[in-house]
Image (tube, rainbow, N blue to C red; front, top):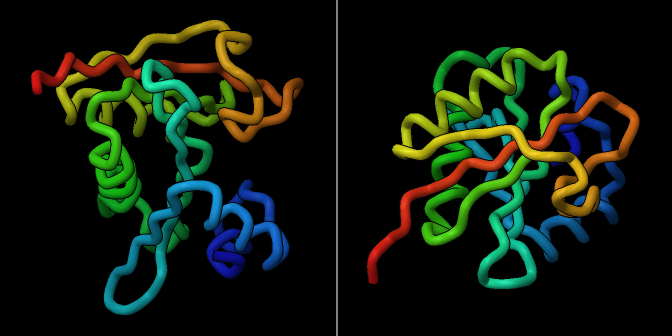
Length: 145
């Protein structure tokens, strides 16, 4: 994961200890193409059953971008919690991430809407305030049991 963090700007490179902690506490999916790790997604369900699934990081190495890796990671993570809505935060100037989120919502037959950043805790999003983040919720249709 550390190697991917180094090439996926503006992702912060974390120590091995921090990455191990993340892997233990959250759902971490790693994408591989032709035997090379090319991307990863970090997410976690909210504490209550009614809480959304929070996507904290989706990152794809530059050489693998625009090949569907990000969308595949989002889809695979969402499939782990099909009954939950999805919440995420993107920096306002990250047009690519916002476009991917809209494409992802459409691909799963859901709608995306902006919500107040204070709707959820910063730690749920994995962000720090003051860096231009906007919060979004992808509302999925209710799944019948």
